Length: 267
Image (cartoon, rainbow, N blue to C red):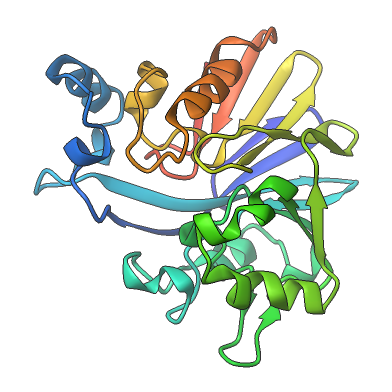
């Protein structure tokens, strides 16, 4: 069984899809980070540094399961011919991770795409020339702002992901914060991309924030003010990050992160 976190009636399941080094050095990715900040980050998350000193990422999605249904947050790096194949360690293993968690693709009724970067949409649509949604019964949720900015964010995904989802009438465009069902909601966290979104699961005074790329390395968890070179609007990304990390009044906030070594972090 993959790692999971129980919050009230919700089981948040971490679904591995792959792991491997990033395509640029971490000093290029975080040019303003100091030696002391790197030392603290390496102590917090030693698994993010491989034997050759490269930044090693996990690539994972998350399933949120309750008696109300199954929500999938992001869709990983995908199969061998996925849009992420030029840089990510494809093929991913998300289908096997779903099976290990006891989740059939047909059971997933909602797929939240946090943003249109290739390592987050890999299993959304599959099949080469005859492309089809991998989750046949799901509505795929994307922010309108992300859809509007697709030519700036990643134009190749219009034909490989967006058009097939529109053809099957499975794409749902959201305008900001949106409730999904009792205890689950999407909330806008723009900055990494114009329409980046995250998912919040709440039960009593416990919250789980499934972050997407709100933060991509432990150094941003320890120092939310640090910009990441691939954030399209660093100031907006910083504000979104600080809103989540410092603005929640719950007694316990858990972060469910796609790229840190540990999938769940208590704040």
